[in-house]
Length: 386
Image (cartoon, rainbow, N blue to C red; front, side):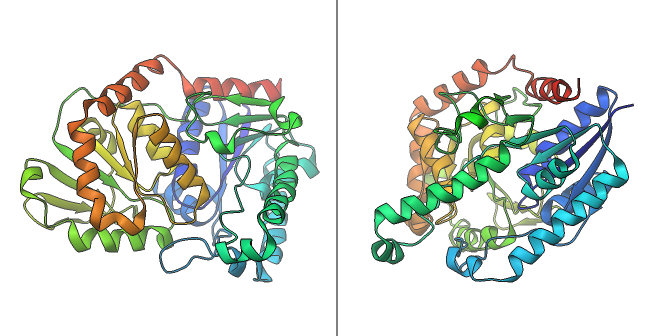
């Protein structure tokens, strides 16, 4: 029996959930699957009944009060490099003990480096092969450095990161192919060494969308706690006062905490769930999906044909660019967190009243309805073994 070792990035639940889907398909194909994870990914996979090595905290960006990443505060922390090296050594130890036939690293450089050192067949899973760093550097620091130097810093960092990704035998981009890619700005302009081994599999999801119509506005707040809390706090501050013209809708809010299954009725039209174990039922009945602009929830909503209202984390370039691209594709609206109280209900009305959004979302769903995303990914994994 072939052994697959899967290591997802532990920031938020998106990487873990798509790796869990991939693991289920690999086991159907006769693989034994071993997980290694930290942070949110570890807790998610343990709750999903997988056996998981690892535990402990994932290396995270430091965050400001509004949830935005603190670029300079992160770089000044001397413990990060030590922890990074420690995790590489831990991955090396795990890999030596299991001796897998293939290693799947979902956005975790630590696993990729350890696997390359041991000479194991390796597949990278990514939706953000490069980073857009210059917005993170901060406006006043960009003025000091100059725009040109800030771009050079970004180029140097990305040259290093993409070179690491390119050591794997194959790279699965868990995104729709161009021109429909959600992470368009992070998957274009890549070096040839990486492009030559890159396959767009589509999101690692097996959609379970029903056809039953509903009147739900589904608000799914995912990501690390430091990113979720500021938005949850702002939403709960005004969401109970639903305008008269929107009271025919039911507002369902998932707080993104899988450790609890608490349900609270905030008003006759607003209910919060700590976690939605049956999220496909809610996605199927939603008229609009509101989210933090994480790649997984965007993909899930679009595969159910639902338009999106996206509120990306301030300064978090991956989610900001995801939201911008969804808006450019006409599949949703990008809302700045600073304007949420002023514009939330207005943008929601636009998505509900302009049927162009829902029509384009349904066209998107139909375009990819016959794709076996997980099957494509398994084919790539098997190709590096044989």
